[in-house]
Figure 1 (cartoon, rainbow, N blue to C red):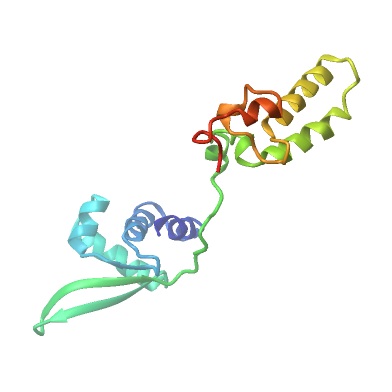
Figure 2: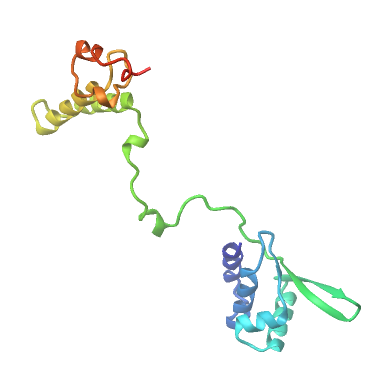
Length: 182
């Protein structure tokens, strides 16, 4: 859940350089609810600073109201982990669309996946009206319409692939019973 929280952190003008880096490293650990568990030593290692600097950064983020802190104590004097909660508002909605860079790289969908055979035939008949009779596009569209009509059986059903070469109904009736469609 890091990207929305990091985007909200980048909008803050009061966070500079290493303090912003510490907040971003903590955001990388955050759950979808903005809760992260990290020790000062781990943050210091991730931010390439001393443990004391990591402690100062966390205290500064607490003072700015960006974080809330909960400490889990065990056996009186020993602190096990620190739990931090991001208190700044962020956009938690899930993005459904891709970015402008990834959207253009996706392959084009094939038309066959969107239309049935009958719909494609009707589309071609509608397109035919736009072309001048006798033009190469008009001729190509007529051939495409003839091909699509040939794929449809007389009852409107799709002709099985093994019958595509047979043109009339008499020849279709001569297909053996074991090969005929059910």
